[in-house]
Each structure stands twice: as structure tokens, then as C-alpha cells.
Length: 194
Image (tube, rainbow, N blue to C red; front, side, top):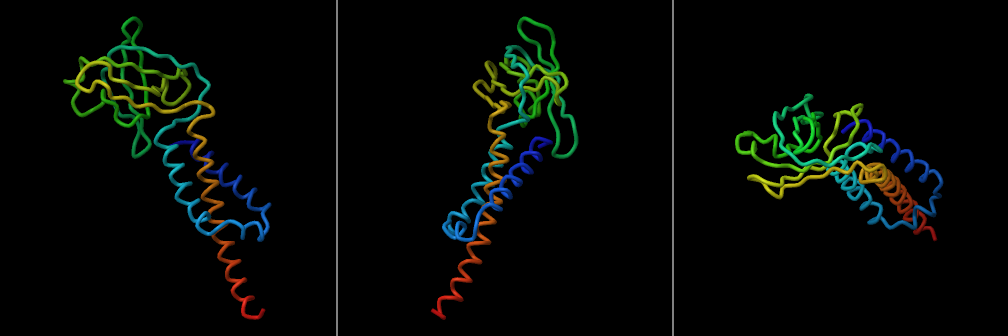
């Protein structure tokens, strides 16, 4: 999580508030209660999907390399942490790579059986970013865990947009639910007098 997640949630809530201000009670009454209530879990699932499959968006160039990894360490405290490891490409200089991918194979409990593994990684070539040189795609090519792969989306118009969309859906779901219940109560009170 980070600034982009917080910004995405605030932006989604703001868009939801703007949209809801333009709606009349009659327009809210058209939305079925089931649809209004379903907006809440759908919005939550969209936010969760975004958190699990994306990182902060970036225009930085993507570099793909194949080689060996070593010396994995955990940086940070609590739930806000990253993993950092040394990566030696087959034909290139030693790189310090960071990633927000949850426990990649080179960081599993014991590195003795992973020492001979070959990895293909794609990272963002941006030293100013945290973590610097962030790996967004890790694939095990040889070794005990061959075939293991995890990707994070860092495209400017990628999965991270599910965060504001989910927050907006949740806001509108609450708004429609509140207004649908209010309209049903007022309609119920008016029905006997007719």
C-alpha cells in the first residue's frame, strides 16, 4: 500500500460524491435495492484485486534480464515492507533489485536449494522510485520451483485504476442503499392514505 492507494481511494470517493450530488431522488429510486447492495462487495473486490495485482503506476522503462539471485533481505517494518536482493544477469553487472511481490522464491526460508536457480525478471529502471529498480515480473526458469511466476501491473492505465473504481462503487452503493430505503419508507407511508 502506499500513496497511490490512498490517492486512488480518495479520488474514487470524490467522484462518487460528485456523481451522487447530481442524482435526484427519482433517479435513485430507479436503481433496484439488490443492485445498490451488490455495489458494496463488487467495489471491495475491485480494491482487493488492485492491491494484490498492481504497484504504483510508472512511465519508467522496463528492463528484462535473466540470471541468478542472492542475498534476499526484508526491508521495512510491519505490513509496509519490500524485499531486496542482488541479481547477477548472465551478461551484465550486479544489480540491486527491490520488489513488492510477496515472498518471491529467492526469499523463501532457506536459500540453499534456490542458489542454483535461474530467474527471468522485469524491473522498472528508476533509481528514484521506492524500491529502487522495482521488479514487477519474476519467473523461475530453472531449479526446484521452475514455472513459478508472479507479476505486478505498473502500467499508467492498469489494474491500479480498480482502486478508485472500487471506492466509487462502494460510495454509490451506500448512497443508493440509503436513498432506496428512504424512498421505500416514504412510499409506504403514502400508500395507505391513497
